[in-house]
Image (cartoon, rainbow, N blue to C red):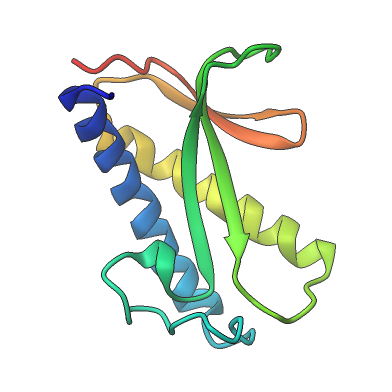
Length: 130
């Protein structure tokens, strides 16, 4: 069971990803066909459940990582269209750029960074809840 402060912290982090999702929907929403059963952006109460993107993060204790514990950034495009690797990389870079800009605004008292850790990106740094 997770504590109240952890839930609040993760809700703030989710709001960051919801904002990034909205920005990417503006940029790419009409360019690629959604998966057949995927609702259009804004048709559900949770941005993860509709539109072209499902973006978020999941906590990892960081065993075997040079950065240790943090949040793995997950970027899924919900399209049935084949996307070239170049497009995936471009979107990944945009997510990281937006995340780096928004984390200090949302978590001004925490020194957070986005780092590449192997083939993934992680949010690392001061994950304190106070």
